[in-house]
Image (tube, rainbow, N blue to C red; front, side, top):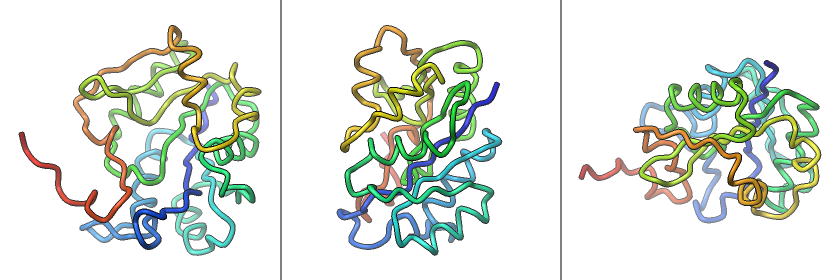
Length: 192
């Protein structure tokens, strides 16, 4: 199947206080680069959506093998970025939507979501402790709806309106719900 990874890296990072996507993780790799590496390890073609003026991030993501699209209207929010990335990817059998500020998702979780899509699920997402995470798999049948997305809610409404078609994949991976919004989010999670 022709499944394209869509890496959304066009957010403003206003709560982080600096360019969070370029912020190094403890092992020295930037947050967005780590997210790209994990996605690229399970999906051959990855299109990364970036903000205008993101030359350094663009260079890093290109070095990881991502195709880059600059979303001129990225300030409108995640929906605009997702529509932009989908348009750049073109029609495909399906899309795996991942967020560049989620570097801790295990490759096995990405593979499980991809495999559900490849097996015919119209929509699929990993769930950790009953919470939906990322990446989210979306069938190519929703191409037109993805192109029409606007605002900051991404594909949330699409998933809500088609909830009965969503394949929920339980995973033991807290990374699927762990995004980095503030520097404190980089602290190791507490063991319970």
